[in-house]
Image (cartoon, rainbow over all chains, first blue to last red; front, side):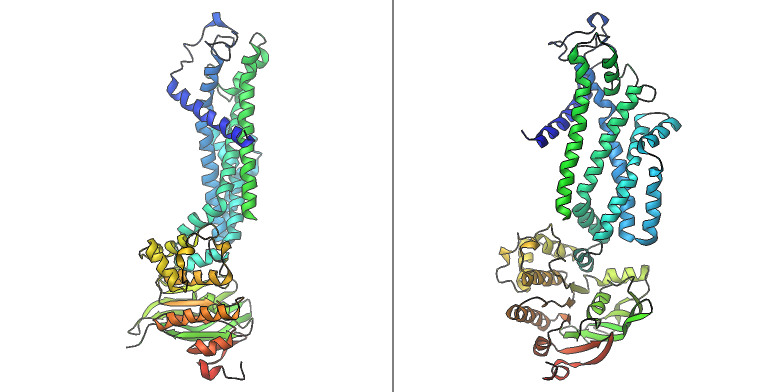
Length: 267
Length: 251
């Protein structure tokens, strides 16, 4: 089994877990059973239970609620807004490129994580705010890279020929330039913003104040509890950080595969 | 009653203070093959690019216009020199509908990720013409491919220089435009391939196409062109019937 297959397997498992969480009917309150605290893995609880007797496996499935959909939202913000501004700048050049670059560069004034923290502090900390913040954090990079690529491609012979053959600007931009030249780049930016959202959400939940709060599960608060509660079974303590590590590794690995393919296409 | 005419009037293109094209005017009728010749740097390709609106900024069109006149002598489209919405509207009406273009670097002007068949079918579709397999094969056959079916699934990088140029001819014809501007379509091809390509273009002109043929090949011009415009340092220094302008001395 190749490393790439592993990566897709992990991503598939996350999507499956999210669907299972949606359809499975797990009740986070009814699952509390202090008499079953720290149980070892078994048929009743595959990965054991936590200090309140809650099924770790089910809580891990439920924890995907905290990041799967919002991280896709973050990717859409990064690709949509950053790609849109980059497309404007790259196609028109000149003043429009400078203006769109200035607008796109605004979120880049602060380090990514600091900017998300600022947003979460200014507004009510929610998955929507975090998703927008994480998406905005990638807008400067997305806009700059798309603008640079389109700027280089818009004067190429096949683009000029398409325009002269009467193909509309929208079709040339969408069909030829963005699809041909930028789709792998945009996919990479989407993967990176998804990974960034997972890291931000997990970190904030680990720290407590701005993240997902108990009794709702998150990989962050599960890792935090596992670190301090030595009564839990080793499998129950290691399962959440291992799953998190696998997920981030898979995302970054797929990003690397796409980057290599993008580089080969560019040359 | 006159034939439809593609006309360049008083074209001036400059880069800063330096004029690259200075007051160039010429016209081509449907069914006519007009050759534009001159030494390298004379402004041939720049004039051709200006005709299809590919010289918008620097160097930029300072003045002049490109017009297409209908059978009754009225202007169907006038492309002004000023950059703005009026020019964009005129170019939209001109490009692909009235004027097609065969670029100098034919292979680079083909989309690298689409097959030849897909690109020809796309060109037909954009022109609002039938774009089924038969129509696509017909367009390729018109451009001089004896066995067009072989090409349909080929990607541009697998084509020879001559084949890529013929595909560009097919794309230009697929638009259904009555005029074509061909920028040095024979450069880099050996003599027999050059001759076959120009024969194809001549045949298309005999069928009613108006062609502006930018070239260095004076021998082929004398054999196949109807009229010639000679450019030198951005100015028209001579124009007239090919057999008169290109004499034995020129060759």
